Image (cartoon, rainbow over all chains, first blue to last red; front, side, top):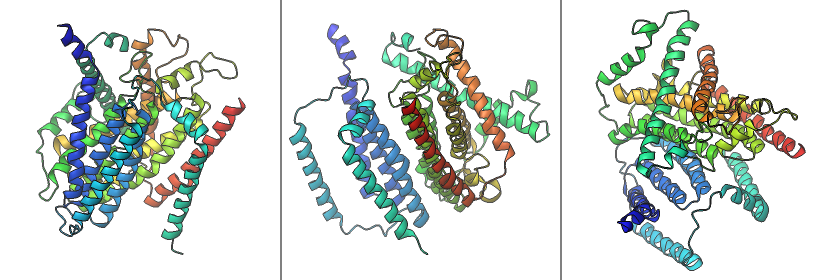
Length: 174
Length: 343
């Protein structure tokens, strides 16, 4: 009886279930992104993958990062993807002109990238665990960015500004 | 609410919250349609409006819902069925995610998260994907044009909306909506704390920009290029009929209500009214009513503009966002930041 009660209130159980459910949806969607013949469908499957990433971040207690993922990737990047696709090639149904000849190379690249990233994560973090009971992380992130990492932050800002101006110069015709 | 809910098992408290969220979505949406779309619009256009069903036409809403439910569910032959079916739900999900961060009282909230307003701004941008899906999957040129116009407009006006909120965030020193309400309730104006410090006084520019931006986000006139009836036949909604159209319709008005409640929370003091202690338990009951009243005040402005102004041209619309609203909101952030350091 007591065992059952403890099991029912162990927060790790629903977390694990949620993790694997979301992960399954993500893996399936990621696979469909590269196998579907319809470009708009590919972009919409990518939405599912990115939403899954956001959900996993929130599950790990990184609320701010998860919300940023939604705002930047789903709210801006994917919308611009869809916007571009629909302006140029918005045909419904399968598009046979979608390239398939470099599939082997792409799969190899994907597997190698997966290997490198897995090695890096396992090598650096090994068996460290995240403290998910900590209440607030937003303030800490703000402090870290504007105190410890202020120079890299400013450098990235200037880089983005340069990219922005470069894009305007390239797109402009006068 | 949280105090009561903390005693309950997870699934029970989640069930209650789900019902609460449904009420918080449907009640404002219905009220807005009846009071403003039926009654105020009729008054402003010198006509009677619906007055047959029930006293003062108050049952017209139910009649409309019944009408939509009876209609045939038509899907265009060349439409992309799954995307077509999913689109209205994507828009509704965005509205539901918006409403759950709103605080209704000191203990009355669905979720109390640290990133509050940031979360709200992030999930509000998800609805653009639903609109693009609807426009593309309808297999209709006008729908696609409407969807593209909507996307261009929503991207442009999301920036001034986010930037206008930053002024409030800088002044309150937090992203948490509950703490923003408390900061206004406990604020002082030059040492006088009688009415708190609703941020509309110090952030009037931010409030104006936010109102204009949400008007554009809702694709309501004068920003209704994406759904212009006369040229695009209601844009991305053209091919939707019956229940699916109803979902878009509810989504539009529910989002108007939620955005207005968000504006009321950020700029008008949220669930707090002066004269009572902000920690008082009374606010758990009174708070939702106060927030509802403030929401009606903000939506009155939104619908007043809607019924008054003619439509913007596409280039004027983009010009207003990029050349005026965004620079103005950036200036607002700088001035707020400087004043925050000085005082």
